[in-house]
Amino acid sequence: MILVTGGMGYIGSHTCVELINAGFTPIILDNLCNSHKNVLERIETITGQKPTFIEGDIRDSELLNKVFSNYPIDAVIHFAGLKAVGESVQHPLRYYDNNVVGSLSLVQAMEKAGVKRLIFSSSATVYGCSSTEPITESFSTKAVNPYGQSKLILETMFTDICHADPEWQMVILRYFNPIGAHESGLIGEDPNGIPNNLLPFISQVAIGKRDKLQVFGGDYDTHDGTGVRDYIHVCDLASGHVAALNHLPYKSNCLAVNLGTGKGYSVLDVINAFEKASNKKIPYDVVERRLGDIDIYFADASLANSLLNWQAQFNIDDMCRDTWRWQQKNPNGYLG
Ligand code: NAD
Ligand code: WQD
Image (cartoon, rainbow, N blue to C red):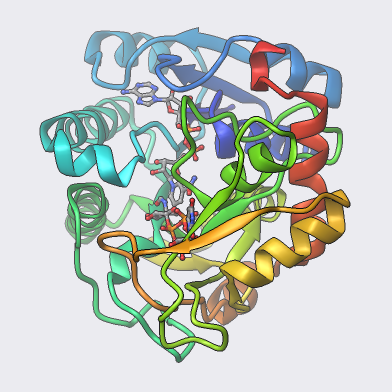
């Protein structure tokens, strides 16, 4: 069994589908602070299997000890955490508590139970700077906000644990910009309130929930002046976790691996691709840069390819098509 913390969330739910399709049995631990219970039925409709679900918090050590003694868990995929950059600047304690304290309590329970295989959700945000060269895992790291700092602290903690005890097997996955949704349109990204991220915002404009998009900055040093990112389909990310899981037994070190496509697209490129996919016009205004944003970054994804035998399969048109299908089928997300 694979314990999936945060398995009811955006990336976790897609990974549960991928795990079931690959013959694994996921068991989900999630406190539902940013997800809905009906994700479980949706996973069942897609795969024919409903994962065991435990509603609870990774900071609850007693609960974790029970979970590890009640279920034969071989490995943990750890998604549970908070992820809103702006909120982390305003409420840093929430981020250090949920992400850092929560992950500490998780690995303590794992150690106690003798379960020493972990896949961790990190982020390209740990690179913290703009680069016109593809970013390799050996690039220097820098936290530019408390959210990024929480990921860096955890990467360091996991590396130290592996160095001290070579029985630990860990893969740290650094995601670039996840977008898209499962092809069924049954699971997808369901942000609360006004979306912070580009794709959920664009799709809410396309469905008529918002009037127009604000493009943050038109004077970046990029091909059209708007910010460039490496967008990756969430189903590709999900299959990256299965690849990492299959790789775990062969590696005792703590390994950091980028998951991206290796291609960068500007905000205007994404708008064009979304207009094509949805056949809707996306009205926009180019406004001031958003504080903390950088010009351009995209992955060198060759390590994932050579080591995990993984490569992204979906392109930007697929990502926009699937985001749009999810938005159309679920105009109010999981609430209908
Ligand atoms: P999400 O918010 O959709 O999913 C996270 C899940 O964790 C939610 O279901 C939430 O209820 C749960 N959770 C949060 N704190 C918890 C706690 N203390 N105990 C139990 N459950 C808890 O987010 P996501 O986009 O699926 O991201 C998953 C992971 O990937 C996060 O760690 C995030 O930092 C990381 N990540 C996300 C992105 C992105 O852009 N989505 C990019 C890079 C890394
Ligand atoms: C993408 C591009 C914006 C919204 C964030 C986190 C990062 C990671 C992924 C977790 C940028 C522009 C956006 C809008 C816009 N998450 N934009 N108008 O900022 O690259 O990364 O999510 O680990 O840590 O920082 O993603 O989708 O917010 O922005 O013009 O309304 O779209 O300026 O160029 P970002 P994003």
